[in-house]
Length: 289
Image (cartoon, rainbow, N blue to C red; front, top):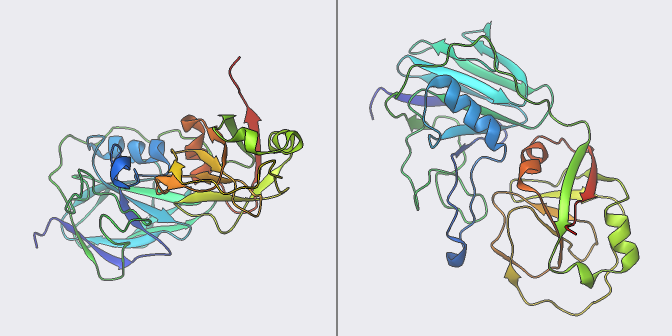
């Protein structure tokens, strides 16, 4: 393998390769995947001089540790964390030079859930259906990182950005998700529909890249018959038999057999990627007149 590569010293709880995803393959049963916090992933690519489609690393909660085989420019964003090079603190949210053989440590999230590591040239694993993204549901793309793995890097495209630090939103202390009515809203009682947009839920620790699960009041169905599987989209709010809403994220299945009560606006989903377990969740109706 070329010297232009990253060695994984510590993979962390869950670190995956992500890019813009592979939309347009739902008819094949393939999820879109891609970075959950897309603005954070786009930011680290801009900071290191990569094009928007370059692949980055998405970390979960406790970061990762990497050793480049050649000198690279790196940027870390998303969930705030401590970043060091050979034990020396360096900037978070800004481009950083990492010499060949130096140890880059992306620490545990101080708030939020997912961090993004952009490297000059981008992570150049083999694409599958036009994307380098890891898809946890279908298993497409590279597997989650493991200790000792080596990731090839592409050739740098442009010089890195000249900034001291790039502003970005803080992880939410309350997650507000704007929703429009879903195709199966009428499968729930009027009281359940009111509760959905008036009561407070909390992010469940069972949440993952497939869906943000919630804890809170159960939504009662008006219709209890079985629902044939039908197509579901990013941001769909499905209600399983326990009555607690689940917001579908990037690795969601392309079909589902539980009723969809609403759909979250896409612009609100990056915040969902950074909501830690226990974060209050409010669903706010923006139904069209």
